[in-house]
Figure 1 (cartoon, rainbow, N blue to C red):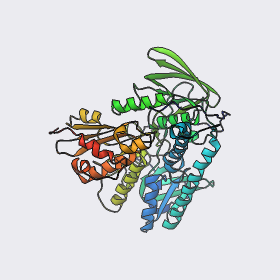
Figure 2: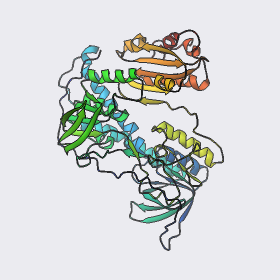
Figure 3: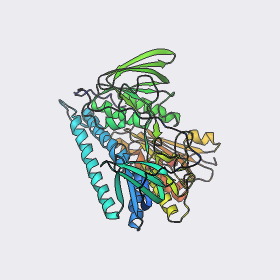
Figure 4: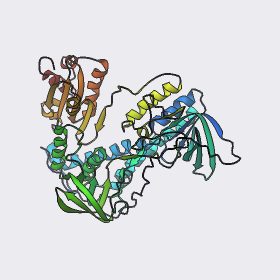
Length: 503
């Protein structure tokens, strides 16, 4: 069992940035689209307009512009979307720095000595910023080489397939597209808890820009973002408490995953309060804050220096004139789409988070493939697609296909194979034996679900996913020859434990 993380020397000076309040989603829509075009303004005509430049949107712009379509992307802030700027890639960059820090604190285990270890968050931030800047250069080069226009500014619909842009240069432009794609993403949800907005809490955006280690961090939310940041900040030296309103961490997953995550965080010295309801917040994040909770019927007050809000996402669909464009929303504020990702307005599509797609960059990329083919006259749908995911805690948690919970809820019979990571030889050589793998096999010998909690879980999952895509029986992996010693080799042992007989 890993030892608790040692306390490094840290800086705790006041923060330079804090989250601002964000408007809540408006869910009203108008049945009759209306056009409100500035008098005397003739719209600029395009074959394709894309509102937003996230993963799916930028790929559409580059691909279809290169095919000869007159294309424009409208982006208000983050060129390339949140993934490359303030989400997936930057967070994994910072998480890697935290992992390196954890190795220093475990160095005795590897026969090394450590003295006077310090965390320099300014250097951590600059490493992240350098990576983001490099990605931005690649994006700009792709816009230039493809011929797609990139228009920086805030866009709103003023009629069917017509967008007015307030550019960052202070100008107004009116654009009309024969076809339009909406790719506007989501933002961190700020629940209507008294005092929360006034406390100016961190979201993942501000947390990635910290040049200091929070002395006492209170993390609201026990999902992906909250867990990844909680562990990283703890490894940098922050005292961390996770406040989760549900009964367990990662509550939608199987109980053995929740228990394994709870044990991991406890071993690293992170305090966890589940089943906790926040009643009100006092103070300012970055200085001094108090959370007043109802926990197990008791009133509890938690004190800290900083709050990180990671309790869900809100679609960026409010205030951009979607009702004027004839684009309807779901009851949760996401854009209503069909299996072809078409909205309720003709020749208007929505992709990525704002369309209610699973909130993963790789799904937005798949949305791009679907919409691209449909724009070009094809008929591709989202129905039945695989949705792999990986949470980048250390060790990682990854899953493809059904969990045991989902299989039971759907009445799907399965045989279960499960293997502790300490049975995998590679895990022993690198002293990373925490966790397990498990697989669900149906009556036709096909793998219908795979879960891994352990070192390189995401990479191990990819091997199983390829077998699932190919429709191979589980015995193909059981009888395979994998290089020794590798993590994938553990799949041989795992599938050797599938119980005999039919599910």
